[in-house]
Length: 174
Image (cartoon, rainbow, N blue to C red; front, side, top):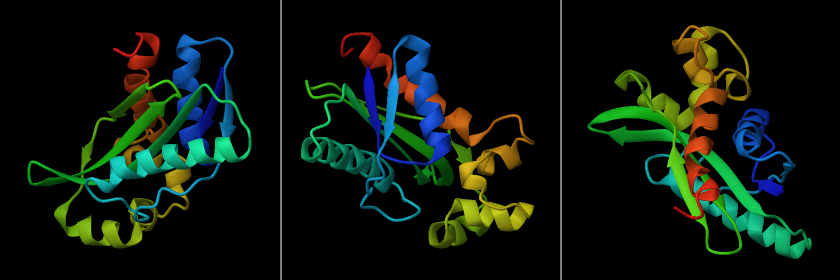
């Protein structure tokens, strides 16, 4: 099975690979850096739009480069206003060429109001790096890793969103 993922971010790639290998033995993950066409820190509906755009751009890339893939996948993290509270969430998407489309979210976690503008402007990774004196947390444990004292990592959230999206794949487009 050939899976194209619209990123070269190792955390997202490893999370995707883990989800697919939970159900399938022969999985080849091909990374392609395609644009999300949304803000660097997606806000509200931009999160899911970024996933759909990456998948659209992956399909175009595959067509242009004569790559036959079984699935096109993407993940995007951003900040969303839920219930008048700002939350960090991830969305994962999986599509094929036969009409299957499946999207899901990760568990979300709250953001202090006083950090929302800075996160929207600078991105979660740089803000967390500054607060916790780390560098490049977005490609490692992520903000959630700091906040849960290492008990949950960014990888876990993205992997769970892929696991939920894969439900349609393993259940004949449920």
